Image (cartoon, rainbow, N blue to C red; front, side):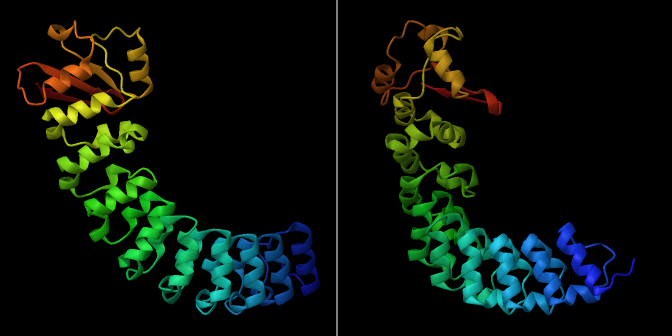
Length: 290
């Protein structure tokens, strides 16, 4: 259907949509596109290249939806005022900024001061900047996985990041970290394991579960309950179920009443008995000897 300009303007005003059969000439009409993006900012993607380079129209679109920055011209995605407007809506929109502005520390600081993991969208130079990295994980600890590996594979930096929230240990690619005894003991002996018990026990290297000191600190976790049998009816079993964790002491240790004290006594003594750790929801079963 052919529309006159007046008809096209009336249609977009009343329907709040761009008719699929509208003539391309109207997609380059400033008044029509202003009406369209005022109703729905995302419709700027239908506008002509000339109007996607129009500051007023792009600002209207971004005020509706910050992600509309991605539809702006290259020139405007390199405009500090417009990019700041987009990241003020959501720091996630940093990814749509120009390479120059994703390398701009002032711009990136605005973003990571609110949500650290958005440092993922910053330039490689910034992701290799220690000051910026530390600022990022102070607002979101998992930002450590979105920066240069020299930080994400550094035990001291990981420990510092753990003070601000979960590390998502499953994202750590370097297996040597999860098998590092000192690192795991620091997590277990501090407040981190109390807050994120399931995460620590799920990703801890199996070999470390042969270590009496590691096992001792596991037994101290206030959220971990031990049961001598799989009775399914005691507080320990109920607590374990709520954590998706079950700990079973073998039958020959059935009469143990204080497993933590016993484990402490075994730190330097080797015995042939075994304790089984079950992570039911993940279908993982780990044995370690005592």
